[in-house]
Image (cartoon, rainbow, N blue to C red; front, side, top):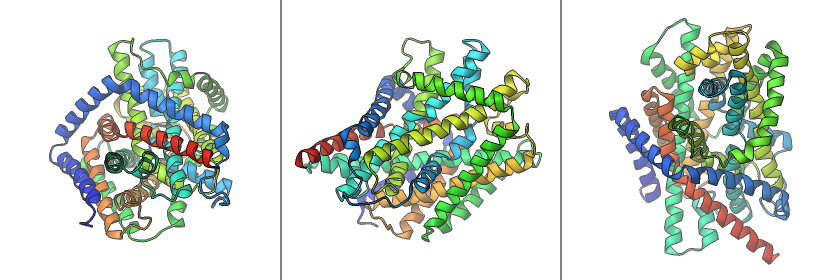
Length: 496
């Protein structure tokens, strides 16, 4: 362990953030907020340009002659059949965030937009903005990162770390080696911070579900600590054993619960209203998704710009924070597939599911606000953690559906922490596909510490800001990865 300076520095950097947050979480939040605001103001345009560039490159590669190149040797066959592969993609994309923001995000945007326009138009635009945040651009970030890792790992035999494509594509000069080493370090930091934020959101949601089920107005930190302790008890043992298909089973179970909730709301709710809004939002998204990717709201007032930074830019860097983690996961299950298969499966299928997900949950929220005049707007203003449970309480069997959300949230957190600890250990051990258990335990402890720090903030907006701070450097790294990939891809074509 002590012979691995990258590991020691990564652990020290992550531990420093955890210790700072435990000592003075308000100071950490204030510094993160100030630094992120400066970066968003000066480089927001570059973030939007980068994610749009990744989307355009992914589509171009999918329809080009390069689409026939396999991620592996030419005679490699896919390890998983199409259905199993797509199921695992759903599991990767369907996490705590979608459960937390299912209705809360569309309704939050609706509240903002009603200050600028009428309610009906605001509902339409709120769904579009939500779909934009969770759609093609998000999955293009994941897909291109995963594609680069899979190509260099399976076709070129390089280690599955972020710096490997940079070294391979740009040579082994001291400068390139230094950039690759720093890229690995920053990728580790981005994953750790991003995962800590997701742990916090999951704990917030589980805690609120417990409060509602037991009729507690506010449980303070007591339930939070209990939920967090149970989470740690669940994921620490998993770090020292090879669960293999067991972890996949847990993720698929969580996914099955989520799909069950989706169908339940669609069939027992105002189906015609939901389907009408869903079809309309799908058309709106297809018509405007590419142009919207280049919108920076430069000429709008301060209110709109603050909203753009707090939501759109935060989401884009959130996906960048998770890109190394999710990219490695996607790469590992995609050996033997062509670039075209990979990009179409990774970008299009999860995007379609996200549009359906928010179309159903968002449609239920808008029906409650615009038709039933249920006080969902007030709940969204005052307690985001409770919105999903408030929606479920409008339907039959609210106790059972609330339990389902709690269980699914818990399962997603456990599988995410275990998977992230493995990827972080692999990255910090130079791509070792079987990192030592003690390294995984150390990362599990630090991820727990970061999650608890995020929980102490008590505020989802602050959590998103801290995640953005950890992810901002990866905006530049992902550009280097794509350039190295395209350069190598073109060189391969010339030699064949």
